[in-house]
Figure 1 (tube, rainbow over the protein chains, first blue to last red):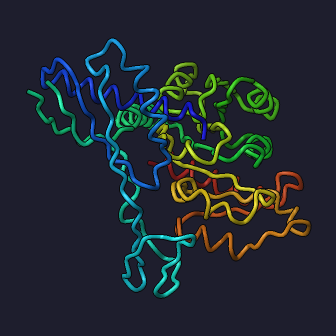
Figure 2: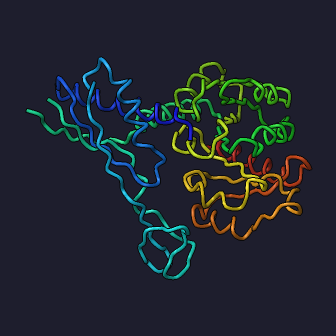
Figure 3: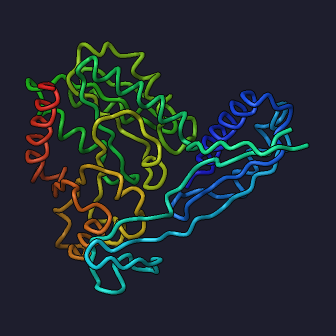
Length: 115
Length: 222
């Protein structure tokens, strides 16, 4: 993955954070709580790096990013078994290939601390 | 005192909103748009070169090419018969996003086209996450990439409507386990429409273009 990917993602996070900070008439954003599924291709350190650069001179300058990682969970559509995938994505109980993702694709900003 | 503010907003919301605007513009103009994605070298540009001559007289086609720096792909699309070929240089970015497509749409008179082919940046990870507003997502895979790619790049394989498996003329020379490949695709995307073909020999290309012409006709009928 190119490191530029995290830059465009970080710009989106900043846009959302500043919009909500203005709506709540905050003077400063202190913490951001991000929820990122295991199946989303995002590198935490890279986002924090870009964040520190692009949040300069904004309400969110110096804010700390907190990442909550959601593990991948799959459900088998044949037998209903739920599991965390290992190397293989097929159902460990019945070996079916018809499965769906329950969690692991999350990619959102849940909350912020402001003052 | 710090106070907690609930946000609960998808991080790619801004992109998704713009993608919806792009879609509305395309719908209003009656232009069917496809987002062509693949790893570098899978044959996106070759597929466009094979596709365009087979659409001559049936559909008026514009091509938008995402490339990190050059205009080589747009030049090839124009040479193959695209009525318009627009280059978007992403300046190093690894995918196209809705803003970039919006800028390209601004350069086109959409009333002059039936089909818009958007060639994304060669990359098997990021493009699937960034909606453009196109109607159909197409992934070009190829035999030499190996049969494990669906298993290794689930985001891309699960997010597309059409899978083109290119370079099937190389099957006799490469250890490609078709069953293993198909199993990965079946897990991630059981409803995907698959076209095995070869851009070099032309085998299978007409199945794809006939299907595409049918899709555009269905779209045009609303």
